[in-house]
Image (cartoon, rainbow, N blue to C red; front, side, top):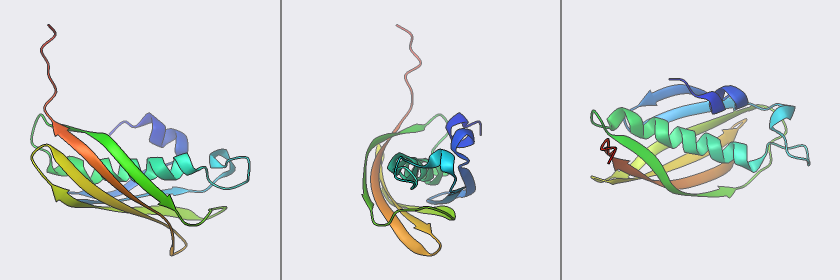
Length: 127
């Protein structure tokens, strides 16, 4: 799947199956904030991408999903190493799914996110 933002950050989807995913990225200075740690928005986008990757394989033909909201807690700063995001679908309804991502670096939990996603069939009516 073409994903320009993932290419920009070095984000990789390592595993993507119905209800779960594993994504990762290697820390690098281009991802740092002025304090010399990975920017929180990079960690957030890792969770957001992981959630989409866990949900997409379970969608019906023609369905899409989109982020409604994500809440994230940050626990530790990251200055080096591989960052891994493990995501699972907690609940899937007809039009909304709830997911959880745990983000690790060197076996340390650095952040945890919970998100809700809309599941829908896009309106192709151009009226």
